[in-house]
Image (cartoon, rainbow, N blue to C red; front, side):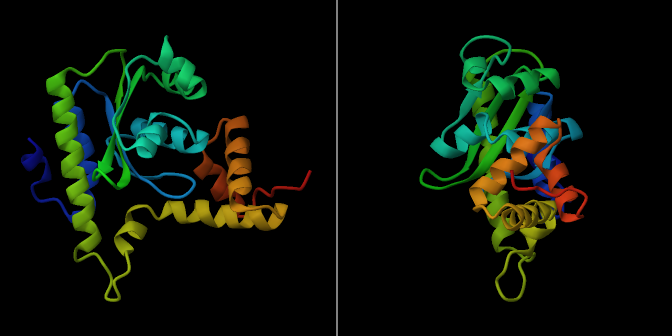
Length: 227
């Protein structure tokens, strides 16, 4: 099914195709892939708009299974976001996820034993654990995703000078996020971490994603004032 799902795909289409295959193979309703970066993870692709939105929720909050999996380099299986330890661990994310109809999230790191380059995040609309066979399947998809990302990094999409336009092409909207952070730094005269924190706080307070607010900052529709 993985091979069939990849048939005829352009290199830049592979992450999204793999997200769709993950939903077909596993008892989940959505999947997304995010690249690890300083500050916000870069949501690269998703199986649906709903899955994309949940990836943005984690990026906006700066918390959730995706962040923890990337930090420890091991799978994080939040099997019940309606009750129990997963809710206590990520209370705000759990509330946001369940409001969106997702009650379990499984995050698998992408990369090697020593380097994590991102995560594959799987979303389920009912509480429950992945059985051993399902977890092996999820890990297989994550492994193929890692290989695909590494191939994109070295492939023909690279520019003549060895830069990485494939990343710019697949996640160009995040350029606005980092541009907005720079503008907030100048407006508030603060460092990057504080600027990102203020961006996230404003987005959360107004029920927006960090990317939505970033676009307003870049277009000068939103300005952060010093308190």
